[in-house]
Image (cartoon, rainbow, N blue to C red; front, side, top):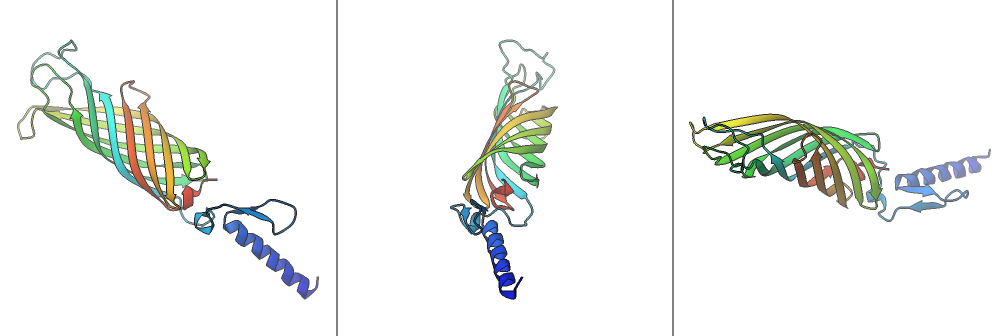
Length: 226
């Protein structure tokens, strides 16, 4: 091969690599003909950066408390009681990608109770909850700037119920296992920023479900999905 031919070959190879790095791919047998995404180089997913996602937002949970009493009144499950409750608060998690489709991480939810269980005897005046979870997920569908994922979250949930907020008031707490199946939607308004919506339903309690709204920062464009 002549020097001129060698230089020409290197130029073609470099052009192909540059085009690929911009999110382009070959569309014919003729070298140099590529189809590129309309988002351009800013939306390229080829960057060698960690697939780390940090997500912060708000959650709303509906659940049914286990029957309890804040005093010596016998626990009743009759018409005078209502164990349904709701909670809302802050929601945050950190996720790491495993290949182009899988991811895993940790999540923490914490907030106050809006709707309180109605008990016999001393009434519940306030409540709080804390929920640490491990999360695993898979990107199911990705189209344009929207991604749909399926997730499984497992951990524990701690709920505290009190008659009032001062020391010495009657209170009790419940600790239970949490296992939730979830659907998660990410809408990218920037190569590395998204607005996320989530819905989860407990696999252990038919009354337990969660809704989330958050903003996420992604280490890799579109979280590196293919």
